[in-house]
Length: 223
Picture 1 (tube, one colour):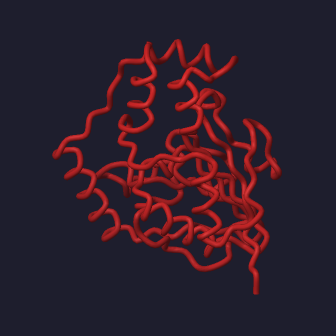
Picture 2 (tube, helix red, strand yellow):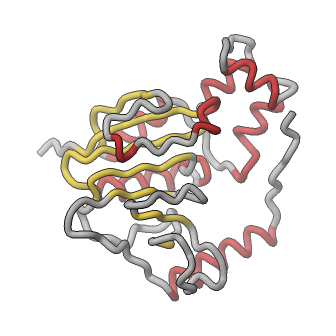
């Protein structure tokens, strides 16, 4: 049973904003792009991938230290410090739910801007539909067993996806598709764990598959 709660408090928020302010002021990071292909692993956390540009929030006050594994430190609420049309693909796993919907829209528009024409983006988020299925008693195996092991009641499951881990937004396929299309993406498709159009974007963590929505889309200009 999962009873772990990640509580937000004013000290935590103040520290986060301080790191963001100092990091954006001191670093002004740009991705180090190769002359061939460039793939972005955005909001990577500990899932650092060789051959990709691994990007996430400023990791600490000593973020200038060379042993840091991230190639790009940033705050996703702000415009990406990157020129247009440089990425051949973008992968972002369990990231959008940590920012408010308006910031998520701004981020998706920024990702559209920095991606090459025809490039693919793979977005994964906790799937509200799965949580609602569990809450309403409509979930089936194999996910049902996992949900029962983690959450004693439907309410505790909804609390987890809506309030825990500093989640600030909720997503199902319909909502994510709407946001992605408004940001400019086309051919928005619901996928499954490990089902990837581009193998280089097949970075899904199996430990998250039970609760995850997988979505792919392309940058296709209409002009």
